[in-house]
Length: 285
Length: 333
Image (cartoon, chains in turn blue, cyan):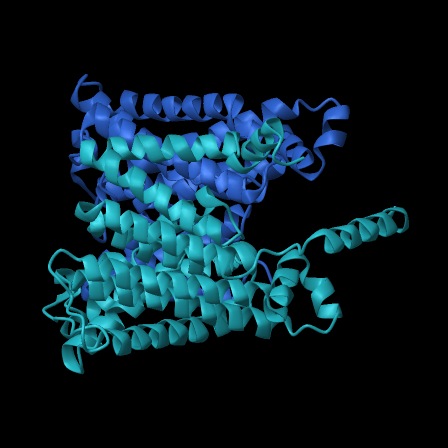
Protein backbone atom coordinates (compact mmCIF):
# COMPACT_ATOMS: atom_id res chain seq x y z
CA UNK A 1 0.00 0.00 0.00
CA UNK A 2 2.80 2.38 0.94
CA UNK A 3 4.71 1.35 -2.19
CA UNK A 4 1.65 1.97 -4.31
CA UNK A 5 1.09 5.48 -2.98
CA UNK A 6 4.82 6.22 -3.29
CA UNK A 7 4.68 5.11 -6.92
CA UNK A 8 1.64 7.28 -7.52
CA UNK A 9 3.19 10.40 -5.99
CA UNK A 10 6.64 9.98 -7.51
CA UNK A 11 5.19 8.98 -10.86
CA UNK A 12 2.89 11.97 -10.89
CA UNK A 13 5.76 14.31 -10.00
CA UNK A 14 7.99 12.74 -12.65
CA UNK A 15 5.20 13.03 -15.21
CA UNK A 16 4.72 16.70 -14.34
CA UNK A 17 8.42 17.38 -14.83
CA UNK A 18 8.30 15.65 -18.22
CA UNK A 19 5.23 17.68 -19.12
CA UNK A 20 6.71 21.04 -18.14
CA UNK A 21 9.80 20.35 -20.27
CA UNK A 22 7.83 18.85 -23.16
CA UNK A 23 5.11 21.49 -23.48
CA UNK A 24 7.42 24.02 -25.09
CA UNK A 25 8.70 21.46 -27.57
CA UNK A 26 5.16 20.34 -28.34
CA UNK A 27 4.20 23.91 -29.21
CA UNK A 28 7.26 24.67 -31.36
CA UNK A 29 7.03 21.29 -33.09
CA UNK A 30 3.27 21.14 -33.52
CA UNK A 31 2.33 24.76 -34.03
CA UNK A 32 5.45 26.33 -35.48
CA UNK A 33 6.63 23.19 -37.33
CA UNK A 34 10.16 23.64 -36.09
CA UNK A 35 12.05 20.53 -34.96
CA UNK A 36 14.01 21.81 -32.01
CA UNK A 37 16.31 19.14 -30.65
CA UNK A 38 18.14 21.68 -28.51
CA UNK A 39 15.13 21.79 -26.22
CA UNK A 40 16.84 19.49 -23.71
CA UNK A 41 19.72 21.95 -23.64
CA UNK A 42 17.35 24.73 -22.55
CA UNK A 43 16.22 22.59 -19.60
CA UNK A 44 19.86 22.03 -18.76
CA UNK A 45 20.65 25.75 -18.91
CA UNK A 46 17.74 26.51 -16.55
CA UNK A 47 18.83 23.87 -14.06
CA UNK A 48 22.46 24.95 -14.16
CA UNK A 49 21.55 28.63 -13.67
CA UNK A 50 19.48 27.81 -10.59
CA UNK A 51 22.19 25.52 -9.20
CA UNK A 52 24.96 28.06 -9.70
CA UNK A 53 22.95 31.00 -8.37
CA UNK A 54 21.94 29.20 -5.19
CA UNK A 55 25.34 27.63 -4.55
CA UNK A 56 27.93 30.13 -5.73
CA UNK A 57 26.13 33.41 -5.16
CA UNK A 58 24.06 32.17 -2.19
CA UNK A 59 20.88 33.59 -3.68
CA UNK A 60 17.59 32.55 -2.15
CA UNK A 61 15.88 29.68 -4.00
CA UNK A 62 12.79 31.80 -4.57
CA UNK A 63 14.81 34.50 -6.37
CA UNK A 64 17.20 32.18 -8.16
CA UNK A 65 14.54 30.07 -9.85
CA UNK A 66 12.64 32.93 -11.55
CA UNK A 67 16.00 34.39 -12.61
CA UNK A 68 17.03 31.04 -14.10
CA UNK A 69 13.74 30.81 -15.97
CA UNK A 70 14.16 34.36 -17.27
CA UNK A 71 17.73 33.66 -18.40
CA UNK A 72 16.63 30.54 -20.28
CA UNK A 73 13.77 32.42 -21.91
CA UNK A 74 16.13 35.20 -22.92
CA UNK A 75 18.58 32.70 -24.39
CA UNK A 76 15.72 31.17 -26.37
CA UNK A 77 14.60 34.58 -27.62
CA UNK A 78 18.10 35.61 -28.67
CA UNK A 79 18.76 32.34 -30.48
CA UNK A 80 15.40 32.52 -32.21
CA UNK A 81 15.89 36.11 -33.32
CA UNK A 82 19.45 35.61 -34.52
CA UNK A 83 19.57 32.17 -36.14
CA UNK A 84 16.67 29.81 -35.70
CA UNK A 85 14.07 31.95 -37.48
CA UNK A 86 16.03 31.51 -40.69
CA UNK A 87 15.50 27.78 -40.39
CA UNK A 88 11.69 27.81 -40.15
CA UNK A 89 11.37 27.42 -43.91
CA UNK A 90 14.12 24.82 -44.24
CA UNK A 91 13.74 21.06 -44.43
CA UNK A 92 13.22 19.08 -41.24
CA UNK A 93 16.56 17.36 -41.65
CA UNK A 94 18.35 20.72 -41.67
CA UNK A 95 16.53 21.77 -38.52
CA UNK A 96 17.40 18.49 -36.80
CA UNK A 97 21.02 18.78 -37.78
CA UNK A 98 21.41 22.40 -36.74
CA UNK A 99 19.75 21.99 -33.37
CA UNK A 100 21.71 18.80 -32.61
CA UNK A 101 24.88 20.74 -33.42
CA UNK A 102 23.72 23.53 -31.12
CA UNK A 103 23.12 20.96 -28.37
CA UNK A 104 26.64 19.56 -28.80
CA UNK A 105 28.12 23.04 -28.53
CA UNK A 106 26.04 23.81 -25.42
CA UNK A 107 27.14 20.52 -23.81
CA UNK A 108 30.78 21.29 -24.53
CA UNK A 109 30.38 24.87 -23.28
CA UNK A 110 28.69 23.69 -20.06
CA UNK A 111 31.49 21.28 -19.44
CA UNK A 112 34.19 23.84 -20.19
CA UNK A 113 32.60 26.47 -17.94
CA UNK A 114 31.28 24.43 -15.00
CA UNK A 115 32.87 21.00 -15.22
CA UNK A 116 31.55 17.46 -15.63
CA UNK A 117 30.30 16.84 -12.07
CA UNK A 118 26.60 16.58 -11.17
CA UNK A 119 25.09 19.86 -9.98
CA UNK A 120 22.72 20.00 -7.03
CA UNK A 121 20.13 22.68 -6.45
CA UNK A 122 19.95 23.54 -2.76
CA UNK A 123 16.36 23.49 -1.62
CA UNK A 124 15.14 26.00 0.97
CA UNK A 125 14.12 24.50 4.35
CA UNK A 126 10.45 24.86 3.46
CA UNK A 127 10.83 22.47 0.50
CA UNK A 128 13.40 20.12 1.99
CA UNK A 129 10.99 18.81 4.64
CA UNK A 130 7.69 16.98 4.41
CA UNK A 131 4.17 18.29 4.70
CA UNK A 132 1.47 16.49 6.65
CA UNK A 133 -1.64 16.32 4.50
CA UNK A 134 -3.73 14.73 7.24
CA UNK A 135 -3.96 11.25 5.75
CA UNK A 136 -0.22 10.97 5.12
CA UNK A 137 2.94 13.03 4.82
CA UNK A 138 4.44 13.93 1.48
CA UNK A 139 7.80 15.49 0.56
CA UNK A 140 7.15 19.19 0.02
CA UNK A 141 9.22 19.22 -3.16
CA UNK A 142 6.89 16.67 -4.82
CA UNK A 143 3.85 18.76 -3.90
CA UNK A 144 5.47 21.85 -5.40
CA UNK A 145 6.31 19.97 -8.63
CA UNK A 146 2.80 18.60 -9.03
CA UNK A 147 1.27 21.99 -8.24
CA UNK A 148 3.51 23.82 -10.70
CA UNK A 149 2.74 21.22 -13.37
CA UNK A 150 -0.99 21.81 -13.00
CA UNK A 151 -0.52 25.60 -13.06
CA UNK A 152 1.61 25.39 -16.22
CA UNK A 153 -0.90 23.12 -17.94
CA UNK A 154 -3.86 25.38 -17.14
CA UNK A 155 -1.97 28.57 -17.99
CA UNK A 156 -0.71 27.21 -21.31
CA UNK A 157 -4.11 25.89 -22.32
CA UNK A 158 -5.82 29.18 -21.40
CA UNK A 159 -3.18 31.25 -23.22
CA UNK A 160 -3.57 29.32 -26.45
CA UNK A 161 -7.36 29.08 -26.43
CA UNK A 162 -8.64 32.19 -24.64
CA UNK A 163 -6.26 35.13 -24.96
CA UNK A 164 -5.58 37.55 -27.78
CA UNK A 165 -2.03 36.24 -27.95
CA UNK A 166 -3.30 32.70 -28.46
CA UNK A 167 -5.48 33.89 -31.34
CA UNK A 168 -2.46 35.62 -32.90
CA UNK A 169 -0.36 32.52 -32.47
CA UNK A 170 -2.91 30.23 -34.11
CA UNK A 171 -3.41 32.75 -36.92
CA UNK A 172 0.32 33.10 -37.51
CA UNK A 173 0.63 29.32 -37.64
CA UNK A 174 -2.27 28.76 -40.01
CA UNK A 175 -1.27 31.38 -42.52
CA UNK A 176 1.63 33.65 -41.75
CA UNK A 177 1.11 35.86 -44.80
CA UNK A 178 -2.55 36.61 -44.15
CA UNK A 179 -1.95 37.06 -40.44
CA UNK A 180 0.77 39.59 -41.04
CA UNK A 181 -1.31 41.55 -43.56
CA UNK A 182 -4.03 41.76 -40.92
CA UNK A 183 -1.55 43.59 -38.73
CA UNK A 184 -0.54 40.74 -36.43
CA UNK A 185 3.12 41.13 -35.45
CA UNK A 186 4.02 37.55 -36.39
CA UNK A 187 7.74 37.92 -35.75
CA UNK A 188 7.03 39.01 -32.18
CA UNK A 189 4.51 36.19 -31.75
CA UNK A 190 6.95 33.56 -32.98
CA UNK A 191 9.81 34.91 -30.89
CA UNK A 192 7.75 35.18 -27.70
CA UNK A 193 6.28 31.69 -28.17
CA UNK A 194 9.69 30.18 -28.67
CA UNK A 195 11.11 32.03 -25.68
CA UNK A 196 8.17 30.95 -23.50
CA UNK A 197 8.75 27.33 -24.52
CA UNK A 198 12.43 27.65 -23.64
CA UNK A 199 11.57 29.25 -20.29
CA UNK A 200 9.19 26.38 -19.49
CA UNK A 201 11.96 23.92 -20.31
CA UNK A 202 14.22 25.83 -17.92
CA UNK A 203 11.58 25.57 -15.21
CA UNK A 204 11.32 21.84 -15.88
CA UNK A 205 15.08 21.51 -15.58
CA UNK A 206 14.95 23.12 -12.13
CA UNK A 207 11.96 21.10 -10.93
CA UNK A 208 13.32 17.81 -12.21
CA UNK A 209 16.87 18.17 -10.89
CA UNK A 210 16.20 15.44 -8.30
CA UNK A 211 15.01 12.77 -10.75
CA UNK A 212 17.11 13.85 -13.73
CA UNK A 213 20.56 14.76 -12.36
CA UNK A 214 22.09 17.86 -13.92
CA UNK A 215 25.28 17.03 -15.83
CA UNK A 216 26.61 18.13 -19.23
CA UNK A 217 25.10 15.20 -21.15
CA UNK A 218 21.69 16.00 -19.64
CA UNK A 219 20.76 17.77 -22.88
CA UNK A 220 20.96 14.57 -24.92
CA UNK A 221 20.11 12.01 -22.26
CA UNK A 222 16.62 13.26 -21.53
CA UNK A 223 15.87 14.58 -24.99
CA UNK A 224 14.59 11.15 -26.01
CA UNK A 225 12.16 11.06 -23.06
CA UNK A 226 10.82 14.50 -23.95
CA UNK A 227 10.45 13.57 -27.63
CA UNK A 228 8.57 10.44 -26.59
CA UNK A 229 6.13 12.51 -24.54
CA UNK A 230 5.57 14.88 -27.45
CA UNK A 231 5.08 12.02 -29.92
CA UNK A 232 2.67 10.09 -27.71
CA UNK A 233 0.76 13.22 -26.70
CA UNK A 234 0.42 14.43 -30.26
CA UNK A 235 2.29 17.41 -31.60
CA UNK A 236 0.84 20.73 -30.56
CA UNK A 237 -1.68 19.25 -28.16
CA UNK A 238 -1.19 20.56 -24.62
CA UNK A 239 -3.80 18.27 -23.03
CA UNK A 240 -2.34 15.32 -24.95
CA UNK A 241 1.16 16.10 -23.71
CA UNK A 242 -0.13 16.26 -20.13
CA UNK A 243 -1.88 12.89 -20.45
CA UNK A 244 1.10 11.26 -22.12
CA UNK A 245 3.57 12.70 -19.60
CA UNK A 246 1.57 11.49 -16.59
CA UNK A 247 0.95 8.02 -18.07
CA UNK A 248 4.57 7.54 -19.09
CA UNK A 249 5.83 9.03 -15.82
CA UNK A 250 3.72 6.55 -13.86
CA UNK A 251 4.89 3.63 -16.02
CA UNK A 252 8.56 4.58 -15.76
CA UNK A 253 8.37 5.13 -11.99
CA UNK A 254 6.52 1.90 -11.30
CA UNK A 255 8.94 -0.09 -13.45
CA UNK A 256 11.81 1.50 -11.48
CA UNK A 257 10.17 0.49 -8.19
CA UNK A 258 9.02 -2.99 -9.17
CA UNK A 259 11.27 -4.23 -11.99
CA UNK A 260 14.39 -2.10 -11.96
CA UNK A 261 16.56 -4.64 -13.78
CA UNK A 262 14.48 -4.32 -16.93
CA UNK A 263 15.75 -0.79 -17.52
CA UNK A 264 13.49 1.37 -19.65
CA UNK A 265 11.89 -1.57 -21.42
CA UNK A 266 8.37 -0.89 -20.17
CA UNK A 267 8.61 2.83 -20.89
CA UNK A 268 9.48 2.26 -24.53
CA UNK A 269 7.16 -0.71 -24.93
CA UNK A 270 4.31 1.45 -23.60
CA UNK A 271 5.31 4.20 -26.00
CA UNK A 272 5.27 1.79 -28.94
CA UNK A 273 1.83 0.54 -27.91
CA UNK A 274 0.41 4.05 -27.50
CA UNK A 275 1.86 5.20 -30.82
CA UNK A 276 0.63 2.09 -32.62
CA UNK A 277 -2.83 2.64 -31.15
CA UNK A 278 -3.07 6.39 -31.77
CA UNK A 279 -0.30 7.50 -34.17
CA UNK A 280 -1.39 11.14 -34.14
CA UNK A 281 -1.53 11.58 -30.40
CA UNK A 282 -3.22 9.94 -27.49
CA UNK A 283 -6.23 12.26 -27.47
CA UNK A 284 -6.73 12.40 -31.23
CA UNK A 285 -8.76 9.73 -32.91
CA UNK B 1 3.83 24.05 -68.03
CA UNK B 2 4.55 20.35 -68.23
CA UNK B 3 3.61 20.06 -71.85
CA UNK B 4 6.06 22.81 -72.72
CA UNK B 5 9.05 21.50 -70.82
CA UNK B 6 8.62 17.82 -71.48
CA UNK B 7 9.80 17.64 -75.13
CA UNK B 8 12.79 19.80 -74.32
CA UNK B 9 13.85 17.58 -71.43
CA UNK B 10 13.41 14.53 -73.63
CA UNK B 11 15.60 15.96 -76.35
CA UNK B 12 18.27 16.72 -73.83
CA UNK B 13 18.23 13.23 -72.37
CA UNK B 14 18.41 11.79 -75.91
CA UNK B 15 21.45 13.91 -76.56
CA UNK B 16 22.99 12.69 -73.32
CA UNK B 17 22.33 9.10 -74.28
CA UNK B 18 24.13 9.52 -77.57
CA UNK B 19 27.14 11.16 -76.00
CA UNK B 20 27.76 8.83 -73.09
CA UNK B 21 25.87 6.55 -70.75
CA UNK B 22 24.60 8.63 -67.83
CA UNK B 23 25.29 6.15 -65.02
CA UNK B 24 28.79 5.35 -63.88
CA UNK B 25 29.40 1.59 -63.94
CA UNK B 26 28.47 -0.04 -60.64
CA UNK B 27 31.98 -1.36 -60.01
CA UNK B 28 33.75 1.99 -60.30
CA UNK B 29 33.03 3.55 -56.91
CA UNK B 30 33.67 0.30 -54.98
CA UNK B 31 36.94 -0.13 -56.87
CA UNK B 32 38.02 3.40 -55.94
CA UNK B 33 37.08 2.65 -52.32
CA UNK B 34 39.14 -0.55 -52.46
CA UNK B 35 42.19 1.20 -53.88
CA UNK B 36 42.00 4.09 -51.41
CA UNK B 37 41.39 1.74 -48.48
CA UNK B 38 44.30 -0.54 -49.41
CA UNK B 39 46.58 2.46 -49.87
CA UNK B 40 45.56 3.80 -46.46
CA UNK B 41 46.29 0.42 -44.86
CA UNK B 42 49.69 0.22 -46.57
CA UNK B 43 50.85 3.76 -45.82
CA UNK B 44 49.47 4.07 -42.28
CA UNK B 45 50.31 0.69 -40.76
CA UNK B 46 50.19 2.05 -37.20
CA UNK B 47 46.63 3.35 -37.68
CA UNK B 48 45.00 0.10 -38.81
CA UNK B 49 42.75 0.07 -35.74
CA UNK B 50 41.23 3.41 -36.69
CA UNK B 51 41.00 2.35 -40.35
CA UNK B 52 39.16 -0.85 -39.41
CA UNK B 53 36.71 1.19 -37.35
CA UNK B 54 36.19 3.53 -40.32
CA UNK B 55 35.48 0.61 -42.69
CA UNK B 56 32.99 -0.93 -40.29
CA UNK B 57 31.13 2.28 -39.51
CA UNK B 58 31.16 3.17 -43.21
CA UNK B 59 29.29 -0.07 -43.87
CA UNK B 60 26.77 0.86 -41.17
CA UNK B 61 26.30 4.34 -42.66
CA UNK B 62 25.90 2.76 -46.10
CA UNK B 63 23.12 0.64 -44.66
CA UNK B 64 21.52 3.73 -43.15
CA UNK B 65 21.72 5.45 -46.52
CA UNK B 66 19.61 2.67 -48.03
CA UNK B 67 16.90 3.49 -45.47
CA UNK B 68 17.19 7.27 -45.17
CA UNK B 69 18.59 8.32 -48.52
CA UNK B 70 17.07 5.79 -50.90
CA UNK B 71 13.81 4.83 -49.21
CA UNK B 72 13.32 8.20 -47.50
CA UNK B 73 12.53 6.77 -44.07
CA UNK B 74 14.13 8.89 -41.34
CA UNK B 75 15.25 6.56 -38.56
CA UNK B 76 17.04 7.03 -35.26
CA UNK B 77 17.17 3.36 -34.32
CA UNK B 78 19.65 1.94 -36.76
CA UNK B 79 22.06 0.84 -34.05
CA UNK B 80 19.57 -1.91 -33.13
CA UNK B 81 20.44 -3.94 -36.23
CA UNK B 82 24.16 -3.24 -35.81
CA UNK B 83 24.13 -4.34 -32.18
CA UNK B 84 22.05 -7.45 -32.83
CA UNK B 85 24.42 -8.47 -35.61
CA UNK B 86 27.38 -7.89 -33.30
CA UNK B 87 25.88 -9.90 -30.43
CA UNK B 88 24.81 -12.70 -32.77
CA UNK B 89 28.30 -12.98 -34.26
CA UNK B 90 29.91 -12.81 -30.83
CA UNK B 91 27.65 -15.42 -29.24
CA UNK B 92 28.05 -17.66 -32.28
CA UNK B 93 31.84 -17.45 -32.06
CA UNK B 94 31.73 -18.16 -28.33
CA UNK B 95 29.34 -21.10 -28.30
CA UNK B 96 29.26 -22.65 -31.78
CA UNK B 97 32.30 -22.11 -33.95
CA UNK B 98 34.94 -19.40 -34.44
CA UNK B 99 34.95 -19.24 -38.26
CA UNK B 100 34.69 -15.55 -39.24
CA UNK B 101 32.79 -15.97 -42.51
CA UNK B 102 30.10 -18.17 -40.99
CA UNK B 103 29.91 -15.67 -38.12
CA UNK B 104 29.46 -12.89 -40.65
CA UNK B 105 26.58 -14.79 -42.21
CA UNK B 106 25.04 -15.23 -38.77
CA UNK B 107 25.34 -11.48 -38.13
CA UNK B 108 23.72 -10.75 -41.50
CA UNK B 109 20.90 -13.16 -40.72
CA UNK B 110 20.33 -11.61 -37.29
CA UNK B 111 20.24 -8.08 -38.72
CA UNK B 112 17.85 -9.15 -41.48
CA UNK B 113 15.61 -10.94 -39.01
CA UNK B 114 15.33 -7.99 -36.64
CA UNK B 115 14.80 -5.51 -39.50
CA UNK B 116 12.22 -7.81 -41.08
CA UNK B 117 10.28 -8.28 -37.86
CA UNK B 118 10.43 -4.66 -36.67
CA UNK B 119 9.93 -3.32 -40.20
CA UNK B 120 6.68 -5.24 -40.57
CA UNK B 121 5.37 -3.19 -37.64
CA UNK B 122 7.23 0.10 -38.14
CA UNK B 123 6.45 0.61 -41.81
CA UNK B 124 2.74 0.97 -41.10
CA UNK B 125 3.60 4.44 -39.82
CA UNK B 126 5.18 7.47 -41.41
CA UNK B 127 7.16 10.58 -40.58
CA UNK B 128 7.63 11.59 -36.97
CA UNK B 129 5.69 8.58 -35.65
CA UNK B 130 7.96 6.23 -37.61
CA UNK B 131 11.04 8.04 -36.32
CA UNK B 132 9.97 7.75 -32.69
CA UNK B 133 8.97 4.11 -33.11
CA UNK B 134 12.43 3.26 -34.44
CA UNK B 135 13.84 4.86 -31.28
CA UNK B 136 11.46 2.71 -29.23
CA UNK B 137 12.50 -0.51 -31.00
CA UNK B 138 16.19 0.24 -30.50
CA UNK B 139 15.67 1.06 -26.82
CA UNK B 140 13.64 -2.12 -26.26
CA UNK B 141 16.40 -4.20 -27.84
CA UNK B 142 18.93 -2.39 -25.64
CA UNK B 143 16.90 -3.10 -22.49
CA UNK B 144 16.57 -6.77 -23.46
CA UNK B 145 20.32 -7.06 -24.09
CA UNK B 146 20.89 -5.46 -20.70
CA UNK B 147 18.51 -7.91 -19.04
CA UNK B 148 19.79 -11.07 -20.78
CA UNK B 149 23.03 -10.94 -18.81
CA UNK B 150 23.72 -14.67 -19.20
CA UNK B 151 23.92 -14.35 -22.96
CA UNK B 152 25.23 -10.84 -23.54
CA UNK B 153 27.30 -10.17 -20.44
CA UNK B 154 25.16 -7.11 -19.65
CA UNK B 155 27.17 -4.04 -18.68
CA UNK B 156 30.46 -5.96 -18.73
CA UNK B 157 30.09 -6.70 -22.43
CA UNK B 158 30.50 -9.93 -24.33
CA UNK B 159 34.10 -11.10 -24.66
CA UNK B 160 36.30 -14.14 -24.30
CA UNK B 161 35.93 -15.52 -27.82
CA UNK B 162 38.81 -15.91 -30.26
CA UNK B 163 38.23 -15.79 -33.98
CA UNK B 164 39.45 -18.66 -36.11
CA UNK B 165 41.55 -18.16 -39.24
CA UNK B 166 39.96 -16.52 -42.28
CA UNK B 167 39.22 -19.06 -45.08
CA UNK B 168 40.79 -21.58 -42.70
CA UNK B 169 44.24 -20.26 -43.61
CA UNK B 170 44.97 -16.68 -42.52
CA UNK B 171 45.26 -16.09 -38.78
CA UNK B 172 44.13 -12.75 -37.33
CA UNK B 173 47.35 -11.03 -36.24
CA UNK B 174 47.78 -8.94 -33.11
CA UNK B 175 48.40 -5.71 -35.00
CA UNK B 176 45.03 -6.04 -36.71
CA UNK B 177 46.30 -5.85 -40.28
CA UNK B 178 44.28 -8.82 -41.49
CA UNK B 179 41.26 -7.45 -39.63
CA UNK B 180 41.56 -4.19 -41.56
CA UNK B 181 41.77 -5.92 -44.95
CA UNK B 182 38.94 -8.24 -43.99
CA UNK B 183 36.70 -5.29 -43.02
CA UNK B 184 37.68 -3.42 -46.18
CA UNK B 185 36.93 -6.45 -48.35
CA UNK B 186 33.47 -6.92 -46.83
CA UNK B 187 32.76 -3.19 -47.12
CA UNK B 188 33.70 -3.13 -50.81
CA UNK B 189 31.58 -6.19 -51.62
CA UNK B 190 28.56 -4.76 -49.84
CA UNK B 191 29.16 -1.36 -51.48
CA UNK B 192 29.02 -3.05 -54.88
CA UNK B 193 25.84 -4.92 -53.94
CA UNK B 194 24.28 -1.66 -52.74
CA UNK B 195 25.16 0.09 -56.02
CA UNK B 196 23.65 -2.71 -58.09
CA UNK B 197 20.62 -2.75 -55.82
CA UNK B 198 19.95 0.98 -56.02
CA UNK B 199 20.24 1.00 -59.83
CA UNK B 200 18.05 -2.09 -60.23
CA UNK B 201 14.32 -1.85 -61.05
CA UNK B 202 13.67 -2.64 -57.37
CA UNK B 203 15.90 0.27 -56.31
CA UNK B 204 14.16 2.56 -58.79
CA UNK B 205 10.78 1.60 -57.35
CA UNK B 206 11.99 2.38 -53.82
CA UNK B 207 13.41 5.72 -54.95
CA UNK B 208 10.09 6.44 -56.62
CA UNK B 209 8.29 5.73 -53.35
CA UNK B 210 10.65 8.16 -51.64
CA UNK B 211 9.68 10.89 -54.08
CA UNK B 212 5.97 10.26 -54.22
CA UNK B 213 4.26 7.48 -52.35
CA UNK B 214 0.78 8.09 -53.75
CA UNK B 215 1.94 8.14 -57.36
CA UNK B 216 3.91 4.91 -57.03
CA UNK B 217 0.92 3.26 -55.40
CA UNK B 218 -1.22 4.45 -58.30
CA UNK B 219 1.31 2.98 -60.74
CA UNK B 220 0.78 -0.39 -59.10
CA UNK B 221 3.94 -0.62 -57.01
CA UNK B 222 3.33 -2.53 -53.78
CA UNK B 223 4.64 0.29 -51.58
CA UNK B 224 4.65 -1.50 -48.24
CA UNK B 225 6.31 -4.63 -49.65
CA UNK B 226 9.06 -2.73 -51.44
CA UNK B 227 9.85 -0.61 -48.38
CA UNK B 228 9.82 -3.69 -46.19
CA UNK B 229 12.29 -5.50 -48.47
CA UNK B 230 14.57 -2.47 -48.52
CA UNK B 231 14.40 -2.18 -44.74
CA UNK B 232 15.29 -5.86 -44.34
CA UNK B 233 18.20 -5.54 -46.78
CA UNK B 234 19.48 -2.51 -44.88
CA UNK B 235 19.19 -4.65 -41.74
CA UNK B 236 21.40 -7.26 -43.40
CA UNK B 237 24.04 -4.59 -44.14
CA UNK B 238 23.90 -3.26 -40.58
CA UNK B 239 24.11 -6.81 -39.21
CA UNK B 240 27.21 -7.40 -41.33
CA UNK B 241 28.78 -4.23 -39.93
CA UNK B 242 27.96 -5.37 -36.41
CA UNK B 243 29.43 -8.82 -37.02
CA UNK B 244 32.62 -7.24 -38.38
CA UNK B 245 32.84 -5.04 -35.30
CA UNK B 246 32.40 -8.04 -32.98
CA UNK B 247 34.99 -10.10 -34.86
CA UNK B 248 37.69 -7.47 -35.25
CA UNK B 249 37.55 -6.05 -31.71
CA UNK B 250 36.71 -9.35 -29.95
CA UNK B 251 34.32 -7.55 -27.61
CA UNK B 252 30.69 -6.41 -27.87
CA UNK B 253 29.40 -3.73 -25.52
CA UNK B 254 25.96 -2.32 -24.87
CA UNK B 255 27.08 0.90 -26.57
CA UNK B 256 26.74 -0.90 -29.92
CA UNK B 257 22.97 -0.68 -29.39
CA UNK B 258 22.89 2.84 -27.98
CA UNK B 259 20.87 5.81 -29.13
CA UNK B 260 24.02 7.90 -29.49
CA UNK B 261 25.41 5.48 -32.09
CA UNK B 262 22.17 5.77 -34.08
CA UNK B 263 22.35 9.56 -33.88
CA UNK B 264 26.05 9.66 -34.78
CA UNK B 265 25.67 7.53 -37.91
CA UNK B 266 22.81 9.76 -39.04
CA UNK B 267 25.06 12.77 -38.57
CA UNK B 268 27.81 11.04 -40.59
CA UNK B 269 25.38 10.27 -43.38
CA UNK B 270 24.13 13.82 -43.62
CA UNK B 271 27.66 15.16 -43.42
CA UNK B 272 28.67 13.04 -46.42
CA UNK B 273 25.48 13.59 -48.41
CA UNK B 274 22.23 11.63 -48.33
CA UNK B 275 21.17 9.19 -51.04
CA UNK B 276 24.38 8.85 -53.02
CA UNK B 277 25.93 5.84 -51.25
CA UNK B 278 29.47 7.17 -51.75
CA UNK B 279 28.45 10.04 -49.44
CA UNK B 280 28.04 7.48 -46.69
CA UNK B 281 31.67 6.40 -46.99
CA UNK B 282 32.94 9.96 -47.16
CA UNK B 283 30.83 11.07 -44.19
CA UNK B 284 31.98 8.18 -42.00
CA UNK B 285 35.62 8.81 -42.88
CA UNK B 286 35.49 12.55 -42.26
CA UNK B 287 33.54 12.19 -39.02
CA UNK B 288 35.72 9.46 -37.53
CA UNK B 289 38.97 11.17 -38.52
CA UNK B 290 37.73 14.40 -36.91
CA UNK B 291 36.59 12.47 -33.86
CA UNK B 292 39.93 10.73 -33.58
CA UNK B 293 42.03 13.89 -33.80
CA UNK B 294 39.80 16.18 -31.74
CA UNK B 295 39.08 13.69 -28.98
CA UNK B 296 42.72 12.80 -28.56
CA UNK B 297 43.25 16.47 -27.67
CA UNK B 298 40.25 16.76 -25.33
CA UNK B 299 37.11 14.60 -25.25
CA UNK B 300 34.82 17.57 -24.68
CA UNK B 301 36.38 19.94 -27.18
CA UNK B 302 35.49 17.30 -29.73
CA UNK B 303 31.84 18.23 -29.19
CA UNK B 304 32.62 21.89 -29.97
CA UNK B 305 34.14 20.77 -33.27
CA UNK B 306 31.37 18.42 -34.35
CA UNK B 307 28.61 20.76 -33.11
CA UNK B 308 30.09 23.71 -34.92
CA UNK B 309 30.58 21.61 -38.03
CA UNK B 310 26.94 20.49 -38.01
CA UNK B 311 25.67 24.05 -37.74
CA UNK B 312 28.04 25.12 -40.50
CA UNK B 313 26.87 22.30 -42.79
CA UNK B 314 23.28 23.53 -42.44
CA UNK B 315 24.08 27.20 -42.93
CA UNK B 316 26.46 26.56 -45.85
CA UNK B 317 25.66 23.17 -47.47
CA UNK B 318 28.88 21.63 -48.79
CA UNK B 319 27.24 20.05 -51.86
CA UNK B 320 26.01 23.45 -53.03
CA UNK B 321 29.37 25.13 -52.51
CA UNK B 322 31.25 22.23 -54.06
CA UNK B 323 29.09 22.55 -57.17
CA UNK B 324 29.73 26.29 -57.27
CA UNK B 325 33.44 25.62 -56.95
CA UNK B 326 33.29 23.16 -59.86
CA UNK B 327 31.44 25.71 -61.97
CA UNK B 328 33.98 28.34 -60.98
CA UNK B 329 36.91 26.14 -61.98
CA UNK B 330 35.12 25.21 -65.19
CA UNK B 331 34.76 21.45 -64.69
CA UNK B 332 30.98 21.46 -64.72
CA UNK B 333 28.31 23.92 -65.75
